[in-house]
Amino acid sequence: MLKKISNADEMSFLVISETYPDDYILAQITKTDDNAGVELGIVLYTSPAQEELYLLAEKEGLSLETIIIEGENLRPMLGGFM
Image 1: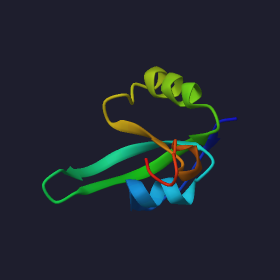
Image 2: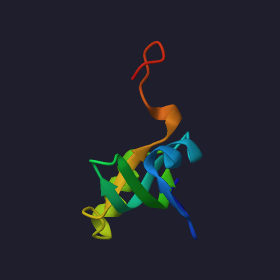
Image 3: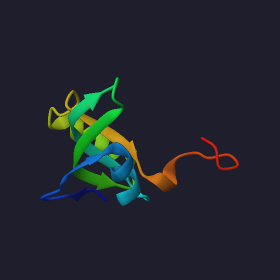
């Protein structure tokens, strides 16, 4: 079920993943700097279904300015390593 997040603060992608550990997150990209290792965004929507967020981003024309982040508990792990 899609959930809209209102008044979210700008956070790093890592903090976003930790804040919503059991969901996929659609976040607006606000800043990326590969040299400094900075990736910041604002959470727009969360959902347990990744496909739902892809469809929403496409429908709303947000595909180029957003990213879908996996919640911390959704990342595949093997013996504690990614």
